[in-house]
Image (cartoon, rainbow, N blue to C red; front, side, top):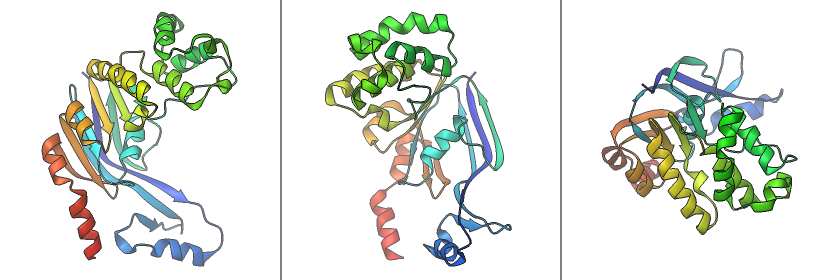
Length: 257
């Protein structure tokens, strides 16, 4: 059974500064104590991207990550995907993870489209025989035709996205981690991508989706995590958490400070 468990997970990023103490003091002073900047005992300034995150996501869960920009949603996705290591806490992942937050990883701009299908597939943990089974379907979805035999650096950004997206969504995932930006693109591709992604989501055992799109969250998610300032503010049924996350109320609260 697929599952994700995070216990007291904290992630920090150092701010590299020179000997200019006044600059460091200025950075530390921005926004006061409610900001996520702190100075360590070794006089390093760090940003606390995530603070003591506790979450348990079970087989069958469809979880949306919501919150204002800078709340820690993408960082949390990357922690679950193994991109970032926490400085404290424990992470337990059961199941093969399919990350859709950086679908260009594993691609080579000097290689052909066909070669990149192989490279990205290997990066995703697929065997060469598994990848070969999907080549025809990927070619049909992307509609790149003869461009698949050309170096990827000759592609437009939209063509690169189509190929990267098609390869990233060719294998059945167990745990799907996704940022909503993967649906960016022209209108025609958006519709094709949405249909393909819907099938991909339905096949997964667990979905974790970072999004500001309430309609998408209600369509695909059964639960939601509301994040702010690198912390979990609420976790529960998606409609209840969306009701708790009221950007207008938050804006009024900050304006009153």
